[in-house]
Image (cartoon, rainbow, N blue to C red; front, side):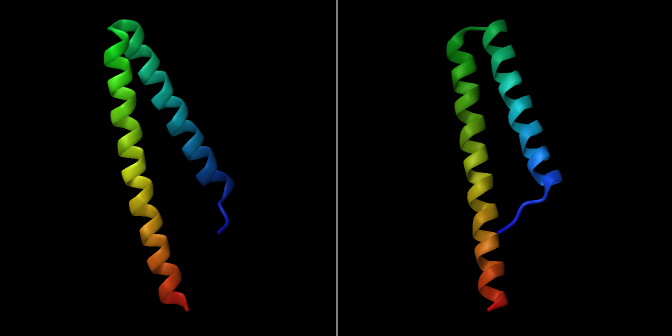
Length: 64
């Protein structure tokens, strides 16, 4: 599986912005709120990644 440079750059920007949002919320509120927001974002990213990977597995299975 190959990734284009544009796709990787998009993910770097997404992860960077997400980290910045978590840090900003943590600095503006309590650390617990920032930690919970970070946890929610990690769980959402895992769900998205799992859905993406199962779609790729189905596409690869259909090409055989």
